[in-house]
Image (tube, rainbow, N blue to C red; front, top):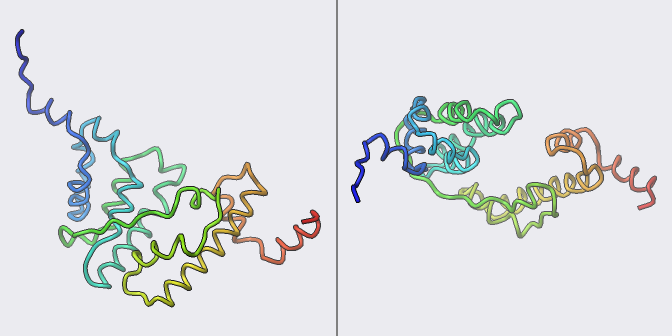
Length: 195
């Protein structure tokens, strides 16, 4: 049996996508990083995971605030848009644009709120989201975290209610509808439908 030699390029192609190398590339604003990935690595690129990690840096409150706000502004609100979601290179460019380019940052993993809550399948509870907001806003007081959690739960449960009524609507349409109707509209609907 003869052994076949593998070239350096073939070895590179067999590598997994390295999340921490990618985060370092985002920190350096390395817009060409995605182009240098192998096809296998490109398939393993997860914009959702990159968003979660890219926005949560350790450091001063100002630095943490900058990364959260910048990632939200430049990437989060567009990366899953129907026109962008099928273009991973564009998603990569958006992630890079969110970085201030000041060098490699240390990060904390922030667990996500349960997928059934995010997808409006189950109602949120304040106890479910307090830990999440405590990690997202580490400098906030307990009362501030409590208030943010209560506000989030009220909004999320309202959207969950709307999703249960309009089962065929997309989540993005539920978001729009939630902004258009009032609690009085919902009460009137329930009254008219006998609930």
